[in-house]
Each structure stands twice: as structure tokens, then as C-alpha cells.
Image (cartoon, rainbow, N blue to C red):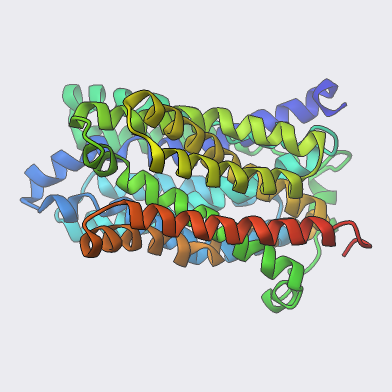
Length: 395
């Protein structure tokens, strides 16, 4: 069992560290900076809050590159380069003189994040855990930093100012680099053999020509898009349902809390069965939770629906990662994952505006919720097809 191997557990801890450095120090702190950007640069809130949109865009565009880097270079070198990029972004943020400068720093940060955290960390964990891989991926992806950093950043900014806080974040990343240098790609390798065993990256077309990969990513992207839509509109949806703003905000908090449990839950499901089954159950959970939200008339039912949505949303990336790790050997896994994350970007960017547009044109959230439920049903049917296809000879 991999969890009885101290070195495997150490690599899991380093993957967890990289993931939370990448996401926790950015997504977990940005909201604390926004009001300061408004005051400092006299910027409208819409512009001051756009840094994470820039980050997400850059991450989506560069995910395939991250996958290729992990396939061609030792993971430690990729992670350290990412940490340096994120550190540089926050160091430049500390001396920003305009919102244009701020947004440019978060473009640098976005590139650093994608090669520090998600893809290298999941590739590392997948390399070390054959048994219990799903649970290991779930533990590695627990978003501890996103929960811990908002109040910490708020307190530090209030005491020392946002520029010092940005510089401190840069310093934290630099301090952690010696730990990241201890990453070993897979069992039984030395630093020299890691470099020698790396194969050239495959062309993107190799993956896209595989219909099972293309259908899998399409179905996954539909579900991922719905998650971005609900996180953007949960509070307006709650107020539309008749709850005050504070209670509506708690719905979003419940979603976020359950997402952490979802990562481990669907990792456990993937281990007990397989990644394809985890994806199918995830899509079914999305269908059920959104229908429950649509039928909700009271706050308790809405809270339950939000929790179930979060459980599914938090487990989705673990489920797709588990499935791709089953489909591809380690050298191809990182590329397959990076390409999948890039291909879902139109869905994650488009679903939230679509839900808003459907509300604006119809005057109700019901039309948007039913539209997304219908999309989830399409994903469910595709996952059933893929589950049957997976029983045929491996690809």
C-alpha cells in the first residue's frame, strides 16, 4: 500500500504544498487586495476584481504547455520555476503604480501557478500512488490554503498594508523552494535518472484523434462549466429565492466547504471502482443537486442542494485525473490533463455569462437551471457510453 511508504507520503505532502502555494496564495488572498486596489488606483470594482480572471485565462491557455513541461523535465524543476514566477508576480505587485500593472502581474502569476501547482502536483501524486491513487489525489487537492488565507491576508493587510503583504507572499514562495527541490518524480529514481528517463512530449493531435479522449473531455467540460456558473451566481440565486444577502452568502460558503470533502470522496470512489465510474456518479450528483435547488422552497433544502453541488464540484477534478491516470502512462498523463484543462476553458468561461443572460432574458433562474441540468444529462449519457467502452481492450 502506497500510504505505508514514507517516501510516497512525503511526495504527497510536497504535492499538497505545491498545490496550496499555487492556489492558496493567489485565490485565497486576492479578495483581500481588491478594496485596496480601488482606493489606491481609483479603479472601478469591476476592474479591480479582474486579476483572477486574468490569472484563470492565462492558466487555461498555458495548461497544455505545463503538461508538456512535466513530460519533458523533472517535476522539481517545473515546480521551482513556477514558484519563482509566482514570487516574481507578487514582488512586482508590491511596487505597482496602476491597475494595468496589477493585471500584468497576475498574468505572470497565472503562468507560474499552472506550472507550480495543479498539473505537476497531480502528476507527482499519480506517479507515486498506484493503489489508493484516487484518495491520494483527493488529499493532495484539499484546498486548505483557500480556506486559511483570506482571514490571514485581511489581517496582514490591515496591519502592514497591501504592498508589504504582496512582498511577504513572494517571500513565502522563495522560502519554500528548498522543499520543492526535494521532489522525486517516481519511485526508484535518482536526480540523474529522472532526466535520462524523460521522453519527448507528444503532439496535441495524438490525444485529439482518440475519440474516447475527446468525448471524455467534452463531457467533463460541460460539468466543469456548470460549477463555474453556480459559484458566480449562487448569491444572486439565493436572493432570487427570497433569502437575504447574508443567508445567500452562506449558501456559497456551504458549497465551498463541501467541495473540500468532495475531493476526498470522489477519490475514494475512484479507488473502490474506477475513475470512469467516479465521473458518472459525479455527473448524476450534479443532475440531482441542481434539480433539488430548482425545486427548493425553503432554506434548509437550498443548503442541502448547495452542499451536494459543492461535493460534486470539489470531486470533479479528482475524478477526471483518476480516469486519465488509468488511461495513460505517467509520461502522457500530464499532457492529457493539461490539454483537458485547456479545452474546458470555453465552458468554464461561458457558463456563468450564459446563466446570467438566460436570467436577464427570461426574468427567472429556472430556465438557466433547467438548461444546465439538460447539459448535465448529456454528460451523464456520454459517461455511460464511455464506461461501457472502457470494458473493451485498453487504449
